[in-house]
Length: 420
Ligand code: EPZ
Image (cartoon, rainbow, N blue to C red; front, side):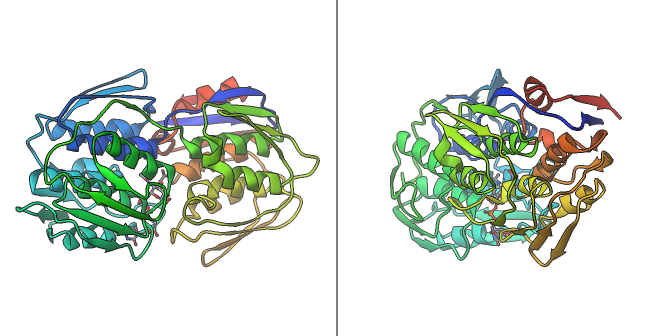
């Protein structure tokens, strides 16, 4: 086990390149189960979740290589349609194999993902939609047993709630379905858009890409002619580095990004007093005289992303007043609060709302990561704390941030990975 040792009172400078998006790579890798040919995928982030999904796809019979951010994968020999608990429990996004496996084989067994630190994370909307497409779903011994021997049928599906992986699962299932599927209240995240674009390039007719309403003409069970593609940049990694510049009030530049994917984040930084300069693929944050408090409410894309809530909470502890943060998507996404309070923050929780006092002197402490994004918030706080902070259980970080301490060291941070 490792921990990160981080020196406080840091200023950052320079520029850092943003990696491919974990939350785009995962559905796209699952979608290769729909392909009749081998594919090469570039800009794949070297993170634990991608390795986990490739292991799962390997257990199903796919053959893949993964080096220097390139993945070559061939799923034509996949025979098994059973995603085992031992892998699924380590990464809930494994549920993304459910739609493609069922669409391709007409049956599959996928372990229920279970909850995680940020909430119960149900998959009822995924299952309800597949039943509407004619699947028979049974929950047995912690597994989803799904069958659709005559294949899935196109139909109209209205999602009761916006669900990112739920939308992705059903978009993949509908791509091989018999007939036309209309989806209403679909997630509009850039990662969902890229999945649609890759499927369109593979020959699937999809209308309404980027909107909340999609019409998908299925291939009647025929596998797709998937083309090589490059994963889009990780907008949450990008936002995390901008927050690092903000909390240390430093000028830094992030490169290889798509600025319009993180407008909700840059707008919030501007509202907090920072300058933001963008070009086609870069964003520079300019320090401010005074960090202004913020009112934040997380919501679906293109609104303020829940995956940036913890990072902004750390930033708000340095604002010149009180900030209010409403977490609207997950019921338990304040796990970082107790760890931040060990560093001297003053944050009050009431239901899904957090009141964050500003002008807080932070002190270094031993803190523990609880989930992927919470752990990045602890690192941001450590940059401005007095003394040297140790962040433990950083396997949470390694799930979604590529070469994190290497990139922060490039920006001048004194951060190192040490053995417990
Ligand atoms: C995706 O999770 C992301 N993961 C999460 O990122 C992200 O926080 C989340 O979307 C919201 O943006 C991936 O893309 C792999 P949801 P997902 O289904 O799809 C409820 C990270 O840090 N819901 O959009 O699981 C659910 O409980 C991770 O990279 C149901 O009730 O989230 C939540 O309250 C963390 N029933 C809300 O919808 C369902 O069947 C949104 O969840 C499905 C979801």
